[in-house]
Length: 158
Image (cartoon, rainbow, N blue to C red; front, top):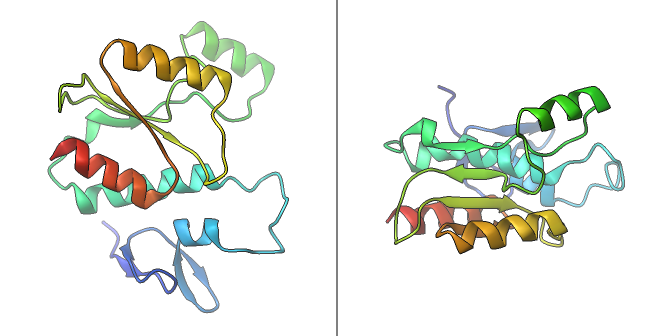
């Protein structure tokens, strides 16, 4: 297991950092940092980086959480047409939340997390999934930072 390092921006301990000339920076701070050289580039995926950082921090904050019950759903991203058709045939659905926790707590069947940037909007398919998930007793939360995702998981599991 990797050794946690301290982010030079937020001073938090994390095992997932980006090395910069100034020192280690966590993915969350890196995603939020104004970087003109990266601004506007299509390959910049802050939601993806938030999710990676979240999964790197989960074992630190929740060492007793059954690891197989918290997972990401492969429902997004760019794919070629053959791969997209194959995944659809296998049952992959667009709009499904990014992360699922299959533990029943607080009267809910499971927890669904959707990662969005502070200005990100849910798609119509994501809104429809949220409605369907909540209608049958699941908790659905849109999280806009790694901290919010960790705090939501803490709240749900307490």
